[in-house]
Amino acid sequence: GAWREIQIRGQTCVLNPLLTTGCKLWHLRESSNFYPKYQFEQSLDRIPRGSKVIMAFGEIDCREGILVSVQRNKYRDMEHGIQVTIDIYIKVLKKLIADRNVEVFVHPIAPVLNETRHIVTAFNKMLKPAVNTAAKSSNGRL
Image (cartoon, rainbow, N blue to C red; front, top):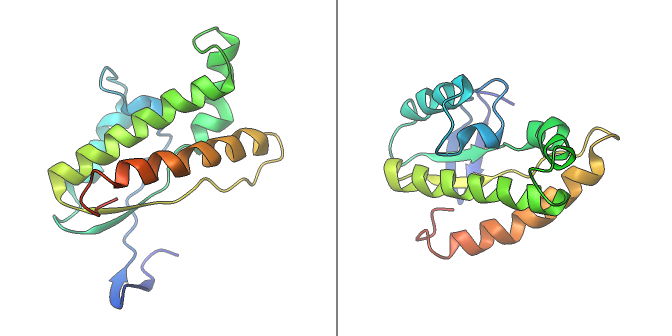
């Protein structure tokens, strides 16, 4: 819930939502110039330095991006598409940490749609070790 107070390591924090509508992780790659990337960057500029940030991205990639890209032969299979997408995500998170000195918590995708549950489950299974590996080089900020 937005504007709810939560406790993180004994510190009270307020959830202040910053929504980037329709943003796929694919949109956040370096070579992208699609408008959701710019909306995302504008949202990041509103985050105070040193904040705690919860990131929840990837659902749209799982729902409509990855499998379509596999069907168009952009990826050899679903796992390859997921890995490319997660690599983009990790790169974005590391840049956010470096630029804004924030602490990032990555929320897994909720597997709510029957049609995409298998993709979301595979995505989350690959995301967790990627985040854990990236956390080792982020000074405890991820």
